[in-house]
Length: 448
Image (cartoon, rainbow, N blue to C red; front, side, top):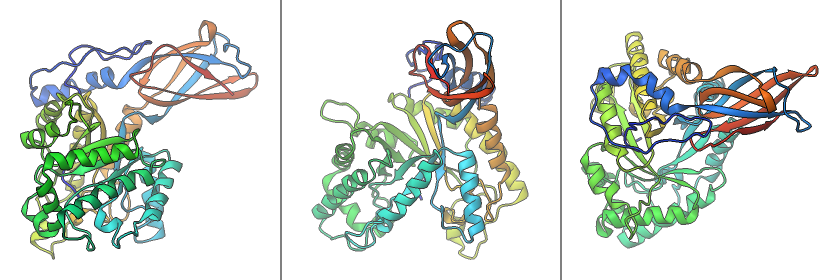
């Protein structure tokens, strides 16, 4: 429940056989129509590459020239995700099965809940088992995982002591404990959530103890201590700073302060929340936000994205508890169009590496809003179908290539994981490989 790298590259970032890329540079703001009209060209430039394969037979000999091989993508490098809070918690067994299928068919990334007040309702009794079960499901379905959040003063755990020094000590211990406990299952973490306005009225009311603990130590020290605790628990983890503030406050109060003694960033990723309950952001706003935070030279993750398929407005449910916030046919049509544009702009920006939808289904959605890609009964909305056509259609590689001398084969495809297959000697041989923008030279694949 949260609101919501580079600068734009002026030279080519095309992945050739050596997959070299140019240095990032800043450019001026672009009008919305230009952003959209050039999106497909940028996607080809930043999200695909020319690949050379060296294909070997099971005995290690080059595959004979002239053979035609089938190449099919099996997973994106880019993280297309959603929170997975309703896994196993839907109203019926049939809905649970549909939730699992629709999630795994479309997405490769999931956010798991680690809200302290819910994760550890009794001191010393954290909810390991439930999260481990979800993480295991994700691993079985080739879905990367992220924990959210490690530190957020939104609700105090009921048992938290009032002493601010002790509360902060326990907060830092919790960070280390969670990251260490799930070291082999979760490698991405939203470490600190919504620190820019940590002392807003609702946090003072709902989390007076944690809010006072942050005030006493100061935001910069709080941020640094939290990230150092996470890094110590798992040096290989990807650590995200996350906020709904998209203006200068986030940059000045949080990002610029989250550095070590030498000025080196303590974070790996800048997380940007983007709940659009009052209406979808125009392309120019989306692009300008990307540009604003790209100057820090870190990947951008859009961590919580919402566009409604029903009546627009913020906090409609809060203002009227009896209000029924339903998905409507006209709202679903609008949502599909806006979702397609939102994802196209973000996928075309070289700084962005992940988008997480919030929530995946209307059932269990924050504020009971019609925010899901699937409905209450887990049937797919037009927005889900539109994303499927992009993620597993337009932005998905299925192709053939002819083998040249020494087992060589070339193709252009989207960054990610692949399967290659060929009929040889009366049987089908297959192999797998992956490539991204760091890949250099030919990729050797032994077929079996």
